[in-house]
Image (tube, rainbow, N blue to C red; front, top):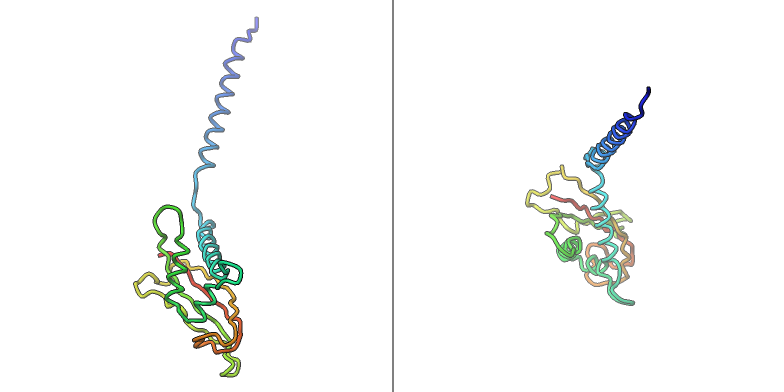
Length: 172
C-alpha cells in the first residue's frame, strides 16, 4: 500500500531550499562591489556640488541685491572667492569638512590686443603638495556678465562683457 506520509517532508525540504536560495540571493545582491565603472559617481557628485555653489554665488540674495560672483570677478579678489567657495562647498549640518582644493581661471576677450581670448589665473592651485596630477579633478564653469565701467577691472578692461569663470575642484 502506498503512503503519503513522505510528502510533508518533501514539501518542507523544498520550502527550506527556496528560503536558503532567496537568502543567498539577497545577501549577494546587497553587497556593494566597487567596480571601475562606478568610479565616476564621486566625481559626478563633486561636479554637481561645485556647479551648485557657483550658481548660488551667482544669484543675488534679494531683488536688486548684489551678486557675489560678479563682485569677486570685478574686484579681482581671488582669495576671497576661494574662501567663500570652499566655505559653501563644506556647508553641512554635521560632520567634518571635506578636504577640497581648488584653482580658478577667468577667460575673457581682450579688445586692446586685437580681440584675443585670454585667461587670467583667478585662484592659484595650492603649493602644499595636494595637487600631484593624479587626483580626479572636476571642472565647473559659469558665465558672468560684467557691467561697463566697474571699479578695478584689471585685467578685463572697462567695457561690458561676459567672462567665463572656470573652477577646477578636487579632493586630496
